[in-house]
Image (cartoon, rainbow, N blue to C red):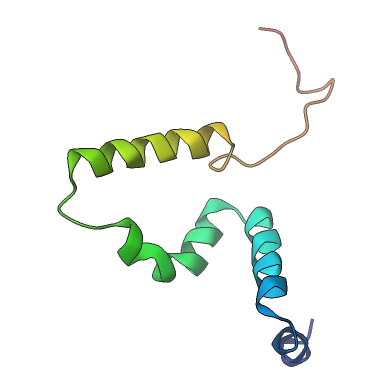
Amino acid sequence: MNKDILFQILKQKNHSELINILDEAWEMMITSQRDQIFYPYISEAVYNFPASPEKTIAAIKQFQKRTLAGDYYAPFDINSKNFSLG
């Protein structure tokens, strides 16, 4: 893929279209890729110190929500070769 051509096309997109592209890219990335790309943009907003009990509890609940949503695990297909009941 040619980066110059891609960015010429992206420059023609409106804000909403770019957000949709970012959303699709986010879904295809693993956590380490997300961290590398997006961390500089959210680090100040997410990591305010010193941490208060309220912020710590909120962070734990957010982590639980993301964990249950599968954000920290790579998806895989269950089939007859890797499935077992116990």
